[in-house]
Length: 338
Image (cartoon, rainbow, N blue to C red; front, side, top):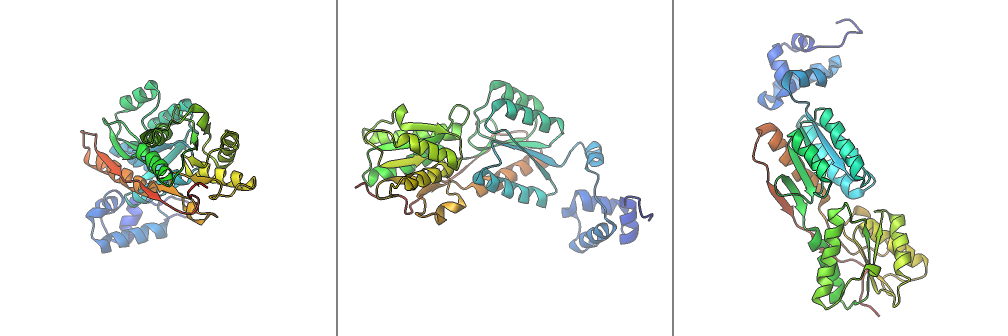
């Protein structure tokens, strides 16, 4: 083969001793071949430097072998965990993952969805159900397999957790150990159904004990550690001061804990701090963070499994719902109020 010519399926067939049909099947349907045959063809392809032409394959098959996923932000350990599991599963099944983010801006999300659809992806994974009607119209018109994660509408496949229950669990625990004065730091709720559901759960738990969560007890912030510090700073101005502070995402709670300790307020002796998500670092802080475990990696794995089933089987009746459990994790950042 000339040095500068790209290797073809003909070259692999000639070198491996198999037919072009068998080589083509190794590239498109490897599960149909015997392991030793597949190994031989892949070894020859790697040695020759063969890289499949996805564009040509997409034109021939009508499938791009690419799945688009749009997440609110890439600067999040929970979304990174879900994306990692999706990537692992899709790659193992011959699909490429195309990722876009929108930083919680509905217009940016709509643009990202439009771009992925125009690239010819075979399916879309999106976070949550709350978005403008125009974005839903775009998704419906695309007629692509769609999987929603974290929250979702019942007319499309979804892999969810009970975000309201997550808020309820952490508030109920703090109430049960004696807290009555609360502050809540949450993400902006207007376009975020996960955050608003968690706040609703906190309200539900407080109402059971005859308490209300006033607007002045809530600080809406970006979902970052520094924003958690800012939210804590605001809530510490309340009189009387809260004895318990809940971050509806661990990053917010971590920021609150840092801010309190930086001001000489002992956590948990003078202020209990709890979060929701159970990111990896939560167990390694000082004090370690009480939180609610959201199984982000499992969400990613289940979403990939649902999508692969839709793409491969062409099931025309979407609406499968997978609900994963949330679990309270009690650590050292919370204690009974003094």
